Image (cartoon, rainbow, N blue to C red):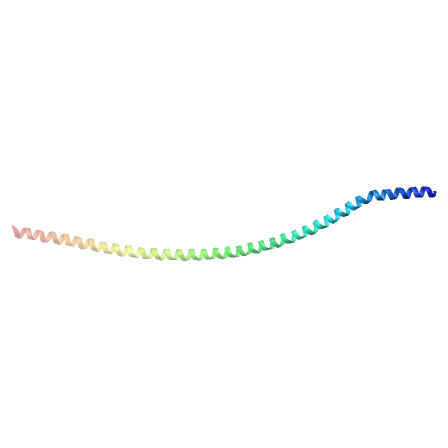
Length: 128
């Protein structure tokens, strides 16, 4: 191989390298942008994980609160049922007492009517 062939080959190689340099520059820029994107995605994932953790904690707290609320509701419901039973007993007793009083009043009125009729009959006999 001659000196001229070597210079020609070197010249061709230099030209090829010069034509490839812009492509390598674009690849370097693309790699930098991908690295920035990866960093941003990592930050976003960390933020979302933090939010998810907060939501899970809130959901757990809400579930505990609702569980205690259901227990309180059951307790109040049991208490109210007991009070209804007591009120029912009291009302039943009062109605029974009123019924007894009404029965006594009926007996008294029948006796008063009977006595009035007897007195009226006796008066009618003495008047004649």
